[in-house]
Image 1: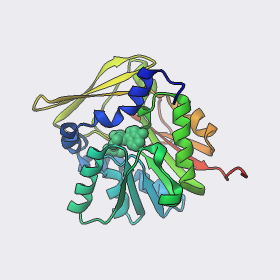
Image 2: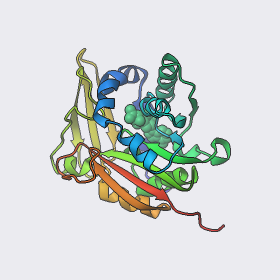
Image 3: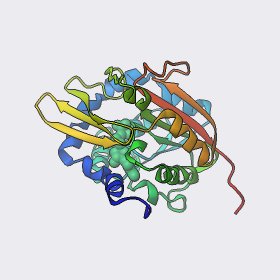
Amino acid sequence: MNQMSGRKHNEVASYAAQYSKSFVERWDDLIDWDKRKAGENGFFEGVLKRHGVRSVIDVSTGSGFHAVQLKQAGFDVVATDGSSTMLTKARANFRQRGLDIQSHYRDWLSLDPQELGQFDAVVCLGSSLCHVFEAKARCEVLEKFRALLKPGGLLIVDQRNFFAIRAGNFKSSGNYYYCGKHASVTLGQVDQHLCEFIYSFDNEEQYRLKVYPLLPGELTTEVLASGFSDHRSYGDFQPDYDMMQCDFVIHTAVASARKPA
Ligand code: SAH
């Protein structure tokens, strides 16, 4: 971190500030839980079950969508997030559904297996890792995720398809992830350093998220450099996909056995 310029450091540290209380209040309108669930069609549950997973930690739970889906599908779930507004929303969503899901307010760098235990899977979904702008810092985060996994445990990370976005082919089909009818997602600044998403709601509220436009190939390299192997990817939940045509790319990888101390 101390090698970063002040500007980049602020961008990394400011993810929590971007999820203001009023934006988070609209988050579930943006998602539309029922449509998002239908669009996923059990994809994550299927991948986890095929890997023999029982316990999962959702490290960017946001308003808790995946924690809820996975708990309802029978997994043991722990949910964490580094935004207090998001975590408060997640807890309200858990309560509303009568679900007992352990949750913690934690930045990724403070995730500690001594405290939280180790899991069969770590999920980091909804294009969250792109909040970290520097490759070295992303690798530190990925190593934290690996430390939360039992050997052979599964990591699932997804990203918006920044390959297509950077090539000028932004699609937000509304079929996946952000399915709500009362919001639209457009782009502000896009270059190789920054991608700005503009979320506009029916009531004229507008929010912006600034993230790093993390390419699928870049993330693959970083995952493999951070103690994972057996990397696979999916475009909009399909193993065979056209890199110019999908909204999201999902990466899975397996935690390698730990290096001897
Ligand atoms: N998974 C949810 C939320 C996605 S939004 C969904 O799909 O709906 C991205 C989330 O990542 C936000 O809740 C944000 O607070 C969290 N996040 C980003 N950087 C983080 C960090 N360094 N530590 C912990 N959480 C972080």
